[in-house]
Amino acid sequence: MTVLPITIWGEPVLHRRAAEVDVFDDGLRTLIADMFETNEAANGVGLAAPQVGVGKRLFIYKYENDDGAPPSGAVVNPVLTLSKISGALPDPDEEEEGCLSFPGGQYPLKRAEWARVQGFDGDGKPVDFEATGWFARVIQHEYDHLDGKLYINRLIDRYARKAMKQAKKSGWGVPGLTWMPGVDPDPFGH
Image (tube, rainbow, N blue to C red; front, top):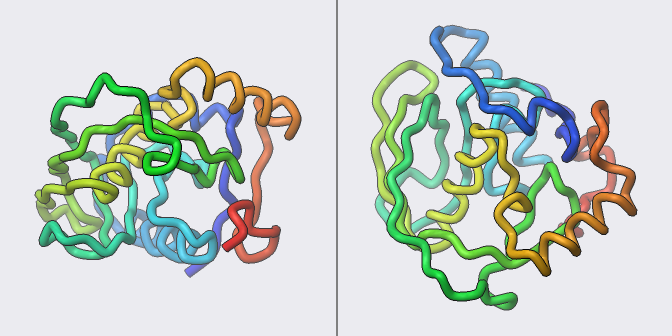
């Protein structure tokens, strides 16, 4: 297994819809293994293929949950069903998110409290589970990457402005920027 560099906001693959996976082969299984290794080195709870520069509809997660879902897994070509998202303002103490492709930034965001994910594992076997609370947030966050969205694209105005200031100050928004988990300093201080 190999730790892969993580793309940073501005890399084109992060901003376009990822392509369906149509071949379940050793190459896909190697990518999944490398994504798990990368996620572990980055102290992440999930990672989508576009975050490692691969424009395919695939994400992995590692999150202990009380929903009866495996604590880690890969979901290929996922379909997501969500509960309604509250129209209330996000709670800055309870609903703050971060993203490995927007390193170091954490901003409040409302998400659905329930999600059902259906898709396939790396061998093409069906995957179908429900997630609630923070686990549902993780699933939604990774799924968004497959549609070319980062969580900062969903922020309310005041937090979106702060995120854009962070991006500008960091020099992001251009292609070719990455960081290397396990080599570069952990942007979230784990």
